[in-house]
Amino acid sequence: MDFSSQFNFMHRRALLQKQSHVSSILAKHLFFNNYGKPDYDPSKNANMVFSPLSIQIVLGLIASGSSGATLDQLLSFLKFNSVEELNSVYARVIADVLADGSPMGGPRLSVANGAWIDQTLSFKHSFKQVMDNVYKATAASVDIRYKADEVAAEVNKWAKEKTNGLIKQILPPGVVTGGTQLILANALYFKGAWNEKFDASDTKDHEFHLLNGGSVQAPLMTSRKWQYVKVFNGFKVLKLPYKQGEDKRFLSMYMLLPDARDGLPALLEKISSEPGCLDQHIPLTKVRVRKFLIPKFNISFGLEASNVLKGLGLTLPFTAGLTEMVGENLPLVVTHVFHKSFIEVNEEGTEAAAVTVALNTFGCSLTMFNEEEIDFVADHPFLFLVKDETAGAILFMGTLLNPLDV
Image (cartoon, rainbow, N blue to C red; front, side, top):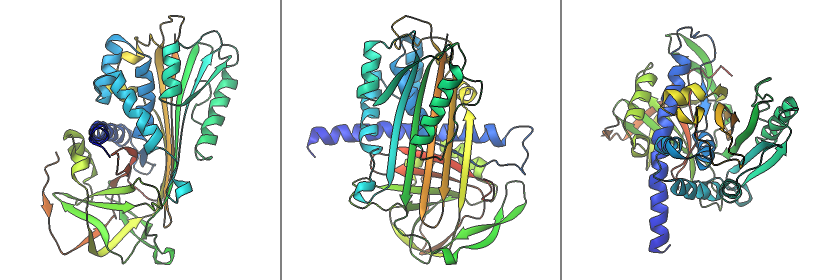
């Protein structure tokens, strides 16, 4: 790699590390939006998973069709200096980070971007070029005005196909109407086998402590092999690498386990308040683990993300500024941002998928503890993420509160 290529790579990685902070802020707000509701029922499913990358790609596509203060707000939210910088980074993410590694023995990855525009409208040439060249998006001219339900069914079918059947419906009934002008969507699918698989015969039921003080008996996996574990002030981090094969990328799942059984809310506050926190707390070497237990789980999670994004200060795309998308100079605005994710973690590895759809209408101080042998017992709520180690991009992120909830 020559100096110029190395500089560009390091620059992109630095920008993606800023995205990690955006991801942690989103995770905190989604968690408290879900768990912190006044009517929250602890007996109901409060597990959460989302794809920061899927949401960010759709917001990047919206930014490419924006101007003025709306564009400035999107760039500020996504931590980019210009739309050119944003598109340059996302072009490499789509081409490199999200390229399928399964032919080379690595994780299976697929990404798809789609756009459905009402047949009475047409894309601006500049926006269509960005869709084609940067986001590799497929575009369809459809009759939304008079066949809204059929178009919604088409988008749902697309999402199901692109996520290998894991997400069967992204758009709920009735949300696409005759007034909808444009639908933008991103779908992401991931399936990776552990570099070192777990023995299913060793998986046993253990007590898992809940945030409400109760507990359940849940299947926890174990291994006698050395693990990538590091102890920090108030929490531990486990890294579980995925099988790489000839693929040049390194993808891993991270589990951030608070020391306190009820420490997850404080951990989310910590990582979201300090930029670079996630990237600073990475286990680099394997250690002997005395007691090692992590749960099997699968999570399906969906939300309409508009209010969360507005609560984080991203308000203008929902009111004005999408002037660079269509040639008819219509005052397009974002009305909904739907997101659904699924993840399954078991002895073999991880399978995950996410879809994001936008509708348009008229403290982490680095304190480490050196111990020859440590425990990693994930028997209480924790944060997890799936990350591309090379680029620094976070594909999936979530919180596990109860392994028995699906």
